[in-house]
Image (cartoon, rainbow, N blue to C red; front, side, top):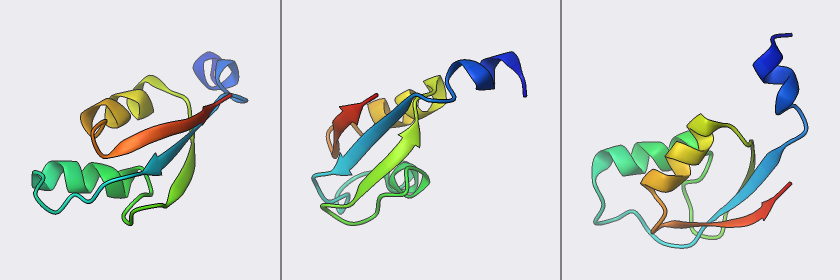
Length: 69
């Protein structure tokens, strides 16, 4: 296991989709699928990495962070 993976092994972030991507850009729709979200109300628990945080920032108007451990 690499050093970076062992640092954030226990850290996760829960994200819930709160809005529809109907009028959003296609790349934002793809980002939701990458976050394992594609329906309103769905919750996904993901590793808390800079890549995941960047994806959340890209669709911040469609999702909310439920819990960050």
